[in-house]
Amino acid sequence: MRKDFNDTGLCNPDMHYMVETSHKLDSVMDLIARRKYFTMNSPRQFGKTTTASLLYKRLLASPEYLVIRISLESEGEETFTSYDSFIQTLITMIISRTRTQNTNISEYFEQNRKPIHNFESLRDLFITFIEIQEKKVVLIIDEVDKSSNYKVFLEFLGMLRDTYLLQNEGIVSFFQSVILVGVHDIKNLKRKVRPEDKRQFNSPWNIATDFTIDLSFSAKEIQSMLKQYVDETGNQMPIEELAERLYYYTSGYPYLVSKMCKIIDELIITKRENKNWSLEDVEESFRYLVNPAYETTLFDDLAKNLNNDKELYNLVFEIVINGNKKMFNIANPVVSIASTYGILKPDARGLCKVHNRIFEKKIYDMMISIRETSETVPSLYRNLYETDEGDLDLESALLAFQEFMQENYSNKDLSFLEREGRLLFMSFLKPILNGKGFDFKEPVVGDERRADIIITYESHRYLVELKRWQGDRYHQKGLQQLCDYLDLYNLNTGYLLIYDFRKNKEYKSEWIEVRE
Image 1 (cartoon, rainbow, N blue to C red):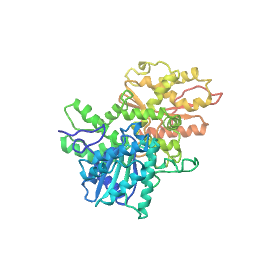
Image 2: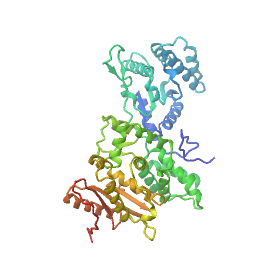
Image 3: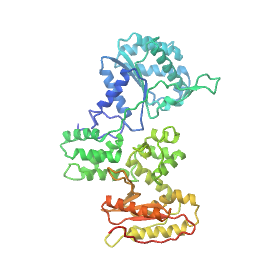
Image 4: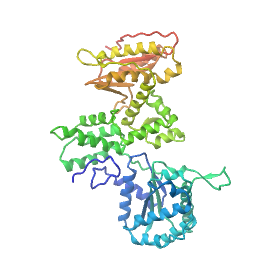
């Protein structure tokens, strides 16, 4: 059976083309060897489950370790209603998951489960079990996010924490390592020290070390997956260049890398006789993936996370739509949650940036769509803004937008226009481009300077820079900046759209020749 690129659930090296990540597993194994407790946390569909599975297999094969792996994902609320219910469910899972691995483990817990009804007795059960083992015991708990909402689970973590400290003092033998797997790093969760004292809190997991191993893929790592595909299928490709381009669009987000490859392999090259991959295939895969009509569970989660959190939406809006710079400070709870969801990450200057260009385009289109349904945007027909040759008549479209703003927003609140002006233009532009082109923000590769809006229409590119009027000196600087962008894109003509918020502003248009 031929392998494929996986975009659902766990990746299996026998079934799927996979990136070589053994060096990352080596780093995790080093944490275990140093008796670290930690949370393997990263955004959804970022490779946590696959990494945990590969780690589990490596631990099973090791003569040094005994591993117990359980998952709380499918447990209902009744599991967490009492200590007894949680403990008995936990023991049942241990028995079930270890029965085929090591009958001695399952038999031990089956024989000793009846008197265990509180965390003190559970702790003693674990200690006794570990003391009689010749191997070091590792506990892995998958999908802990939902469980962290329940007090009984936090108390369980507190028991693990307290016993870990006793182990460090040499008083007892306990788990070599405890690994929690989930989206959130739950070591900052709080629990009351004493129920009667509402002011005192401590973390049930503050003994956990930071998990700093990057589960995203580098361009070089992506090459390993592409080489595996070439060796198996015989289909050829410029591996290094394709890996760089895949990384350019995905920033190494594991699901997105596999998804783009899957689209090329199963949707793009199947339409032609030549099955070799090209850079244009990556571009087509990107266009397919960012099409507003195309949805995945990851994109659905992205939209829900933004729309369910007003502060998060506003932060991302300012970055994506208005291009405002925000410091990436993880102590800021909004920035922290944006990072946890994989929406934002720091750039080289310590500023917030959207994690990858696919997310940025999906967010960009979503926010435009929301604007389209909440504000008056004229019904436009593409052929009104096409030249006789079928190219985009952008000048006419810009003049129509100027007229639209004068008629509909001349008396609008200033703060609204400053925030929404760019979005209004993009909402205006979208029906004109629909079907034959799209607009996006694109930093120049290797430069990271960013033009406001790049428009593609058929095979042509257009560059529009949006500025706020801040005086003639700033205006001249903006013209020079536009020229620099045009040079980078090998274009001779560009467009500067100026928002003037002065009361005595003049609506006008002109062509300016800045350089010969």
